[in-house]
Length: 140
Image (cartoon, rainbow, N blue to C red; front, side, top):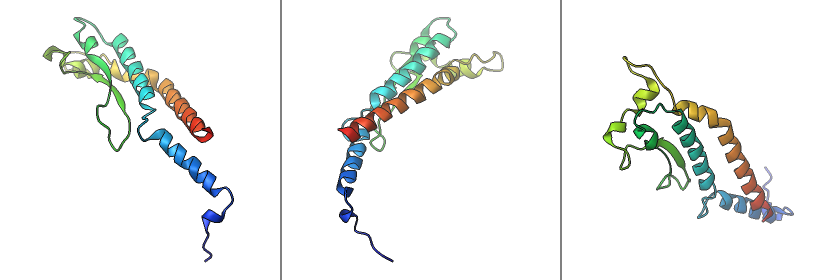
């Protein structure tokens, strides 16, 4: 079997440089997608806040969007959730009961519909930003 010496292929070094730029566009110190992911988490948060049934407003006020404070395998991430931490009181620990219902009260979904409603917008937003990053990386 014949062995190839890729470094002898015309333009190979240019292709490798472009791949290295592309790799740097999505990782490294930039975390360029983090802002877009956070925007998407805020879309879900805002939609869920509009859909949640309100009595006292505590559950609505506990719905948040956050960036992860740490990275898993060097990947940026963001999420929307009900924050049972410092801002919310113990009285808001019933979000899952509202979402899925109980034996005595029916479900009033607000989070799942918020995700479903924004799904395509989120996919398009992330895809568009990734495409922009690829073009900028390869051209730059």
